[in-house]
Image 1 (cartoon, helix red, strand yellow):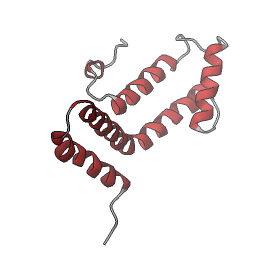
Image 2 (cartoon, rainbow, N blue to C red):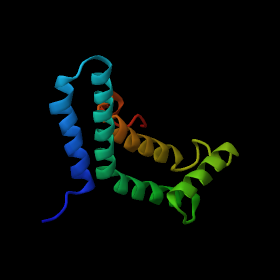
Image 3 (cartoon, helix red, strand yellow):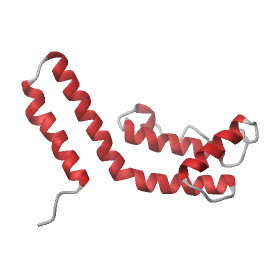
Length: 123
C-alpha cells in the first residue's frame, strides 16, 4: 500500500480542522483554527501550483536578464537592476513579467481576490 502524499496529508488535516474541530470551537480558539485551516489551504495550492509557476517565472527572468541562474539569484539580479535604474517599466517584457508573477503568487495566497477575476489590467 502506498503512503499518502504530502498534499494528501495536508489536505486531511485541513479537512479535519474545518469539518470536525472548528464546529466544536469558540472564540479565539476557533479563530486560530480558521487561520490554521487557511494556512494549510495555501500549502495545498503551493504544492499544486508552485513548480509550474516557478518554472515559468525562471524562464521569463532568463529572457529578461539574458543568463541562467537559480530563481532566487535571478530575482536578486532583477531587483538590483530595477534599483539601479537599469530596468524600468519601459524595459521590454518587464511589466508583463511583474504582472504575471504577481497574479500567480496571489492565486496561491488569495485565490478569491477580486482583482484576479478582472483579467489583465494592461492593454
